[in-house]
Image (cartoon, rainbow, N blue to C red; front, side, top):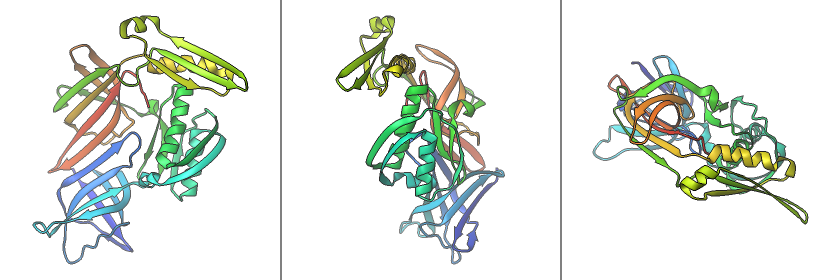
Length: 319
């Protein structure tokens, strides 16, 4: 395994000696890509906050971002710990936006243009959000609200990430991999299933139009008998779409959420947060033989070995 780590300081490119491996983390939402590594200091190497960093493994480019943190200690003065983030780090900025008749993809392009961020492929998310006001919240929150509205309306999940320096939005369905996680490829694993959060068997959608108020309800009587009444309430601007939204939300939330944590799995460079992998594992209440969504992946490259830790979700793709 060949690891190429490049640091750009002003007009100088450095190819530093890396100590104790490289770690790359991706979360599906709310966090930028994070690269951590330790380099050996010498009289030539110069690393400063804001420096560009690129990582490639076996010729495959995985990460492009910028140094945000560096640290050292008195006991290891020759070593410098560095943390770099990709462009999505700037989505932690806060701002206020008021917009009308935009898709989630258009919202992302608008924000990227305002903050001078480089954009790659942005999927057409189709659903037009009538209007939203976002007051002094993070750019992550603004985009996630738009994606949540799209998920509720279309039951379609989209994944935002930085693809080696280009902000990208893809349909999660297009990110399925022919990668199998089973007892033979996972070092260890832990599984939970729950109806405690984001599981609802009755949906109430309210439409307020002047003095008129209409309520649309979708429910699953059998699951109400099994679990008790778990209700989710939402609103809609047009009564014409009230029943459709209630049905869509019931289809989205009316099932258990299943979570699986896998450690020390055999690494695969294709896996990022938002990918789906095939899981073949047996647990107390279920035998999983199908796709699960990667909520978080941590790639670890050390001593010629590539391992990864995965947080997976199945059952329903809730936001």
